[in-house]
Image (cartoon, rainbow, N blue to C red; front, side, top):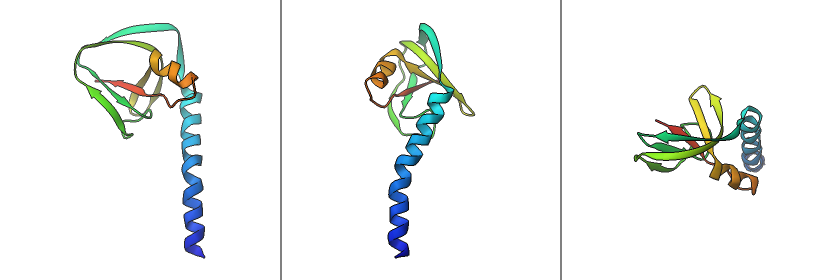
Length: 101
């Protein structure tokens, strides 16, 4: 019985933790008035969440020009959302976060 209860708690805690993390970044997101275009001369890294400990989706080490929509600042630094990712988020998809080296 205790094992079944523990399994139920774990199953329901995953969506709750995701919802709390989502609220955290939404509450602390700073949106720019206009898209700001930046050059990332040393490349950038894309994450699923605004944390260097989150899953890395893709990496690139080439120079890039990025259109930034806004950012979240936490104890690990600044994580930026591109305009493309913002548009994806507006359509109900999970946004990606850019951390510039």
